[in-house]
Amino acid sequence: MTGLGENGRDTDGDDGRHPGRRPTALKAAGLVLAATLALAVAAAGWVYWHLNDNIKSVDIDSALGDNRPPRAMTTPSPSASPLPTGSLNILVLGSDSRAGEENHELGGGSAGGGARSDTAMVVHIDAGRTGATFVSIPRDTLVTRPSCPLPSGGSTGVSYSSMFNSAYAVGGPVCAVKTVESMTGIRMDHYIEIDFSGFAQLVDALGGVTVTTDEDIDDEDSHLTLAAGTHHLDGEQALALARTRHGIGDGSDLGRIGLQQKLVKALLDQVAATSLLTDPARLYRVADAMTAGLTTDTGLDSLSELMGLGRSLRGLSAEAVRTVTLPVVPAASDRNRVVAQEPEAGKLWASLR
Image (cartoon, rainbow, N blue to C red):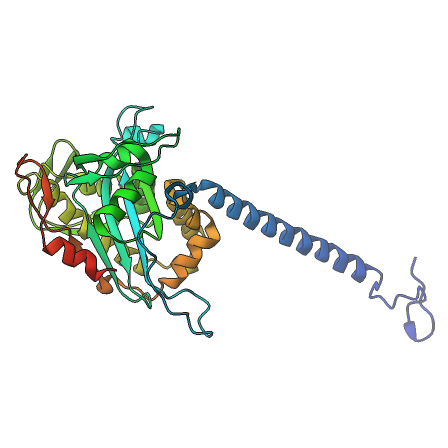
């Protein structure tokens, strides 16, 4: 029982305020805060590890050695700019990988089979990183495929008048890079490949993509039917659009390239319009989708390296991206194939060196 002394004061000495309880409460709050911070750090660490672990890579530099075109000459970045600003050339491939159930369901062929480079673009990023040129290479282009090292040892022989996409089928990313460098005289600084599943998941994570088509599309192979006009596509539909060729124009690969170039610009617009930095959950979904279907060279095989490249491109807008197709003409030996049109093709590659 509490006693009262003179003037009605509490004789228990705690003045009614229970001072002993405050440190206990502060300790409990501190423990909760520490536990919360520990969980946040652990979660952030797991996210980084998970995204980093998603990325697959190929050591192209070691495989090809020094017998390659020279690197582009660049001037040092100003000391005030910690990000690289020199020009870059990147070979970007979309592969119809057979690996994985999701790729198979999206039309990637039978499980356990090989893969082809369904889409090929040489992406030249200007010095200063404020402009870029995307050059599409028709997969039906006949090229001289150089001798390529094989992962199992040995090498392929030189092959004349071979379809461009056979390089990837025969020797994977290493042979694809070597073939592009041989036909362009341009060194590929990096290699990026995304498979069917990764592309579809990326589009879905971004909330879809809006594309305007100039003509009706009805392609039994890609299973896409669209009336001419503007459409908001989900990932599976966007992938079908990227693969469509028989339902438009003359059914050649050139028609498909036109759709792919529209899609590239639409995706750049969608990324710019999506507030990823203010929506951590969506940012994670986009990063997870992008890295899950990605194969890179060893110079881009970590999350930090990919983020560095992304930060250096933050000033690049869709309006500053030029999309072109390698100039080609029908091949004399096979009217269903094409060859580079000279001197136009040579001039295009020279402009990017």
